[in-house]
Length: 472
Ligand code: G6P
Image 1 (cartoon, rainbow, N blue to C red):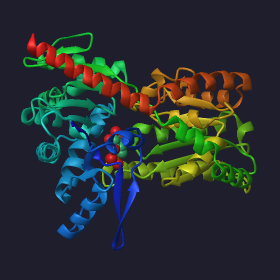
Image 2 (cartoon, rainbow, N blue to C red; image 1 turned 90 degrees about the vertical axis):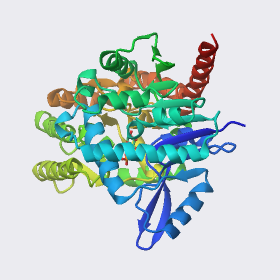
Image 3 (cartoon, helix red, strand yellow; image 1 turned 30 degrees about the horizontal axis):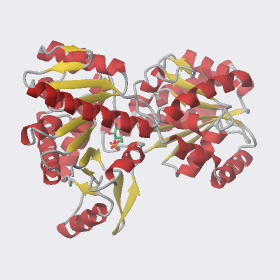
């Protein structure tokens, strides 16, 4: 029987070292739930990095055994690989470039060499699992070379690739010294998926401009094969969020928070710490709101959750300082004995507490500078059982293509952002309900399970098409 192998840089479980013991925890992000139903089925597996440096063989064996019990195969990275592949090429070259932050991008030959070597390492790990007719689904920017490496070794495998971040205009791809290799790497797949048609168009234009390959209706002809390219906007596990928001635990937490906040109205922001998320601009906009509309002082607070991420990368460390400084300045300026303008948390929250925050918030601010999709926007929508609440959403998040009933803003326009917060706070209930109901219907229908099924069905179709063309 043929197997499905999921490959991503990060496994859905991360291993954490606390003093002398290792603990196993779910990784952040929606992918694990979405693909959980696939990788745990039959003899399927998920291949990826467990997120820590493993010190010796005994520890390696222990991690391997624990993960294998839950259908996961770890790929261990050395300290040099974590530095040059993960922090280096993946997060200091590709991440900033693909999010239009080229001013933050570095171009180091050593980082590229490590990127190639680690993609080869992943290839070897997958080949140990994959039979000749298996289906392999590769995820995200850390593994752009993997589809072609796998194709060379297993010409008959079915290979899918999905990019979770934006694919930028070909002008940005051109900046990369290794642009040809990166594009060629992707073309080993039978199906390449993006969150939006915009990203897909950017990719096709890069391939046409740089490799001279043309496409029609998402069908790309390479000298050897046909590759399908399509948009698959990722969803969330809607029921999981709806249920968490309706749970006893969430209600209890919500009650505690309301009491502590003395019923102050709440604007909520939740992100991983990242310069792409527009966190500093959001803080400035909240400051402008309090300056322009003094009537909101003492009445509205911003609850801002920032989840620690990639703190070894310089830009992330300095962003953390900038945020600390801004929060301190704004709070120092506006706080009263009984009111704190910004409640700032630098950590992650368990699901029930997140659900309580979603329930509590009248307004959610999802205002990234660039974001492949942004699932927080969808989680907020799924948590609003009474359909009251307003989503303010950046036009540069993939989610804006679907959630057009949010208040859509330009995240660099701090003035507009401040006005949109005011508009959200005074929006009549009927309008809130109408907008939220429309967004809920969409987020509920196109959930992560339908996303997975659509991609997998399309991948089988791509393979059949490939076989028919080969025999014609
Ligand atoms: C984004 C990327 C994922 C990544 C996640 C967390 O969502 O698209 O590939 O896993 O961020 O980042 P980290 O560097 O901690 O894996």
